[in-house]
Image (cartoon, one colour):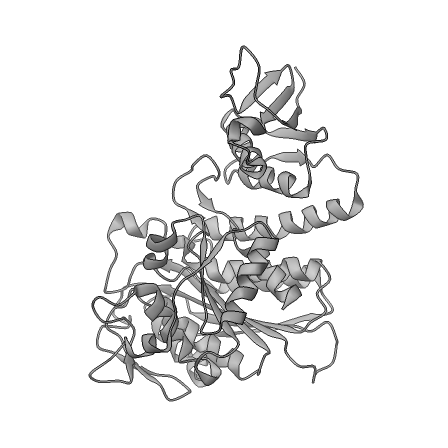
Length: 429
């Protein structure tokens, strides 16, 4: 029996004995994915068929025939990926541009999925920062420079949010500051700043999570992974704009040194925050990254985070959520997602949401008032740390970045869904 299975994507439904409802049919070492059995959705059929082949233990495939285009090939890879099994795939195209693009997507997406799926023991804050910097330097060694600010040095530079959230762990919190500057000019303007939440494990702190909710919290650094992967793909596509990347990395653990409910954090812009829930820590670390990014005076500022359960309740795990005060900026991200065959949905963010995180002892608290929309108030919290309270800024709550259990489209774990949106935003904005 041939070791490599040749996979065809074909119109119509399967014949007997497979039946009209069959997604897959076989002829020796040839497999056929039937678009007709997927209710007309070719990308859905390709990805779903790949999941079926993975479930059958098929580890080597070659995409064959005329049914494939670049998006269908990529949908197949997205479903074929398995975090536990090494696979090989022949893309089945001789087009050099397609091969180059698919290779760039795979390199970025594989890094995002593998670093996010890594154990909390293997991927502490410094490892996340170093891995991100190392991956980007391999792509553009002459254009990428970086520094890592760690431990008490964060306090010396005014990054109190990351320090407070991470001080409960014996593994020090860090901020990665990375500069992609293809111009080589030190005074080149910064086009875009990217900020990512890098909580490498989130116990909830003293507002501790139930065990079943904590089990997937190695994925709470998905925002840091996603902005890094998005930048990597944009660079591979030839991005010639200066971009700065800020990753806010910490473990949120319980100890005698951990931050507590009732603590007040004063940020370098003078805003004071009362901690009323230590499980709302992502916004506390992102505030530092947004403040640092604001000092660069970028044309655009985008942050990404696995920030709220409320966003997932609103849109499920198939869409990422988009927030901005400005229609034009939000639409840029939605258009980028559409161009890249990813799913994103805008959720409400209005100026009155800024008033829905009150505190009796500080300027604001880190949670919204009872009955307020959790995802919107979280975004509004972040806006207080952006110049002019959010102009030219967009926030992505990564509702669709992680799959807690396998389904017919995705393996368990990180999906990489969102990195192409960010890459396109960088290219087109």
